[in-house]
Amino acid sequence: MTRAGVAAGSRGLAWLWLSAAVIALDQASKHLILAAFHPGQELALAPFMSLVLAFNSGAAFSFLAGAAGWQRWLFVAIAIGACVLMVWLLRRGGSALFCASLALIVGGALGNLWDRLTLGLVVDFLLFHYRHWYYPAFNVADSAISLGAVALIVDSLRGGRSAAARNPAGDR
Image 1: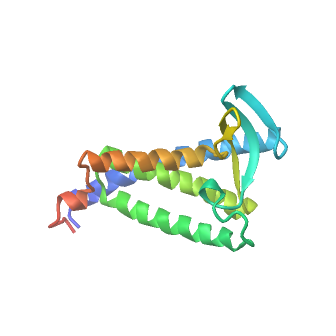
Image 2: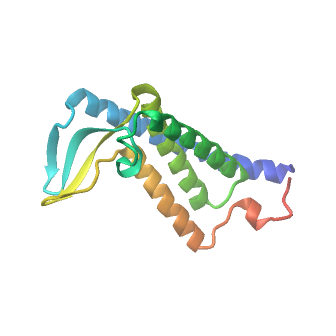
């Protein structure tokens, strides 16, 4: 790899500060909720938003939450594999939006991975609702993953590409 290729990779990996910030914010917020709430306890913040301590042994929207426990290790493996892939993509570099998107997703995935490894499930606490409709509770990590996914789509629609895609001959 040439010096330009190494520099591009370093610029991509420099975005891991954002992943670290997401992990820190996610874990700090979960720690505060765990210390202040009992499971199921709810505190209304606005007519449409509450804080609630909820646990999710499944994935998004409680997918596989009712399984016998094997899903924990499946989601651990998926999170590790996805993070390895995204860090590899970060190393290759790309637009600022592309790198920020990947960093947000990595931070969110690692925040929830920590919960799965230490607690066996994910701590959720943000609850949006309207009358009798409730959106499933979520957390800072889930928000970072969602924001990162939307930003990746926006980057794709704007024509953003990784450095390797822009330079197919490569500096490898």
